[in-house]
Length: 113
Image (cartoon, rainbow, N blue to C red; front, side, top):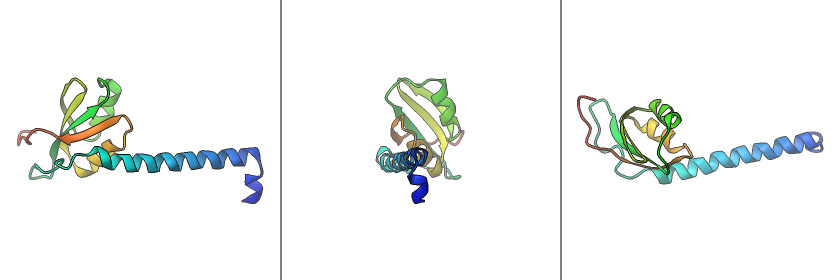
């Protein structure tokens, strides 16, 4: 270990590893602050619910495709994406995206979703 850190490449790799770990810790901490307390209270029989994902910009195709892995997109209002059929695990994954500002409870769940 001492030998590896004695080289420029070893120090660079160690520095990169520290940055990656710090980034993951930061994402994990900030993810918990993005989710509103009301999220998930109105669930379907299958355990799904609706959320509104607030972004700091108008979402582009990339953002919608990324979020489709975690539920159905029911529409958009300015910089808010309305999603349905979301689970707790989906909310956690969405909140870890650095470009998501806030996750709020969506409209009442529809049995036809």
